[in-house]
Amino acid sequence: MTLLIDNDIVRRVLKPAAVRRALESAYRDLASGEAVCRPRIDIRIPTRDPRSSTNGAPWKAGPPAAISPSA
Image 1 (cartoon, helix red, strand yellow):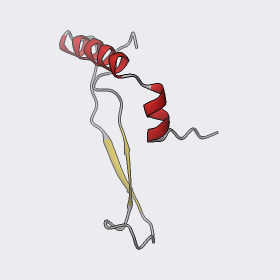
Image 2 (tube, helix red, strand yellow):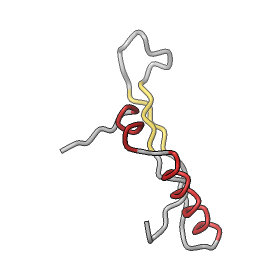
Image 3 (cartoon, one colour):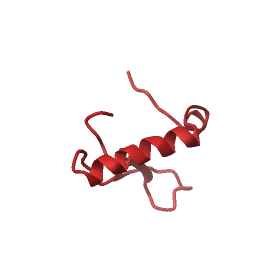
Image 4 (tube, helix red, strand yellow):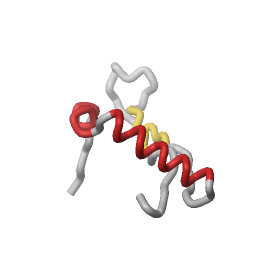
């Protein structure tokens, strides 16, 4: 099963205050050495869509700024 989360779903589910709290906690854990941070992954998927200016559909994935064991 594949779960696709688009921007509309993100807007409905994530609230700015909750995101700030999660990021503050993650950055605190990162600063104290209790979390790790990995770079975002950008992948170009080939497409024949003439509207694609890059000759590939961008797909970007990444975790929050830091991943904490307690998250």
